[in-house]
Length: 291
Image (tube, rainbow, N blue to C red; front, top):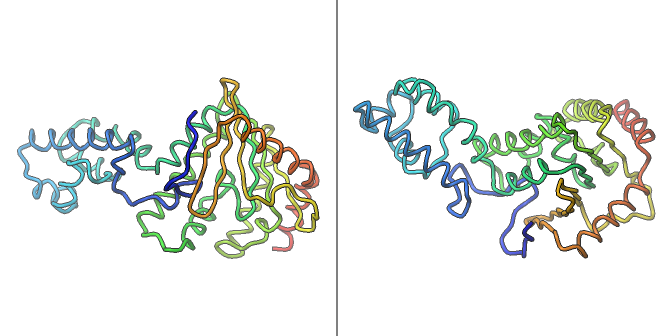
């Protein structure tokens, strides 16, 4: 597992990554280029010029050019319409899954791959609900208040990427998931009171799953091992352990044993300092009643 050595990085869920244009440094670029070539081959076989094809599927000529050149990530509806107009018999529409994964920011895909290999995941969050615990409307509200602001396209891109990672809850064999949430994350009304209420209800539902434990770190704790910021520890199937930490504009994946050991120690102490899972459920119910 490679360790991030610094440089230009982005937030945990890739929320400061570029637009719908694939990063030339990402491996997803090859996928998008291959899809673009297939669309071009089908279009040419149908005897359509780019402007004619664009008009038929409801997109401009420039958009068609960029997609065929691998410079633009096609949306699902683009592939559906292209398949229909070009008579591809489902061959183009079938690429939607590959494109969907490629459109997520690389940091998200890297994290999702780690999560897919994890037999145990432990996380501590201090500003908002952990991405795996967020409802769709909470996630959308969270991205909507980012500064600088996202375009509508990017906002939907990041929401989709975040929700896609939540497949981990249904994975078999089950991944043991433990979360410690700061009390403030239960009270901060991201998206408004009703969005927060539904988020808290969702939190209680997740906590009922046998392989999920959610704990709350009360604000009045005077001894707190998590003051260095949020963290995540993942134990993988091959027996290795990696850490994940995030800041304002940077993330770091840690695999060096000494660094991972520090995160494991901190995470263990944080869990011991937080309310127990049962006490935490009662606390969340109390906050829900007050919201």
